[in-house]
Image 1 (cartoon, rainbow, N blue to C red):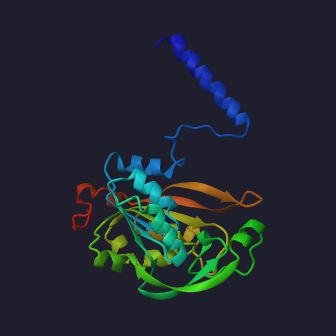
Image 2 (image 1 turned 45 degrees about the horizontal axis):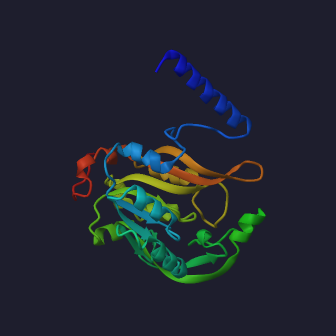
Image 3 (image 1 turned 30 degrees about the horizontal axis):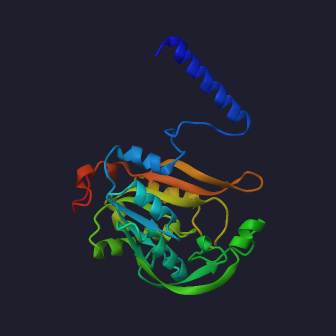
Length: 268
């Protein structure tokens, strides 16, 4: 390509970027970190295959379907505790043989617990809603409609019983219950058996006793786990950050490489 052609192409790209920016759009290459979590996960793994994915708070399978399409060699364990939502999850992932669905919630220990059911099922939580939700759309979605008793397990106990020795990607969408999940994964975290964590994190009060971003971040830092980026920012009427998704990486677990799922602990 001639220098004149290169200059012309650069000029066209610059003009288009200016045009979109003037209309309020931010035009960046997909390879820019923080735009697409699946893309970033693939880059972190640098061509290696993810073998084991845990999808906590699977809802109707939105994330499970995406992961099944993008990580076709992975065994995906999708946990959804709400009975009716679980039926929709099963129907939506039926075409993916690598997705295993479980009608159970994940927390600190095994047992039974009440699930607080809201108008919009994606906001169901093991924690009750705060007394006052100020914004109309959020308040409507989180209007309580009842409770249902569900089963609870911990990651440590489930992985022990199912002989899962390493988790390449742990996705959490558990509506403020993140610290309970992490406390139920003490052994996995202490032994460096979770490589990536992708979790919704909260910046404003939605549930009683919920974990905030800083709580999740501090807990993961104790295990040498680092923040990669934030995605899907949801903001208030005044542009304050309310919630988003966060991707974390455990460098020591990533170094395990070929030791994944062999039953041997990764190098310390």
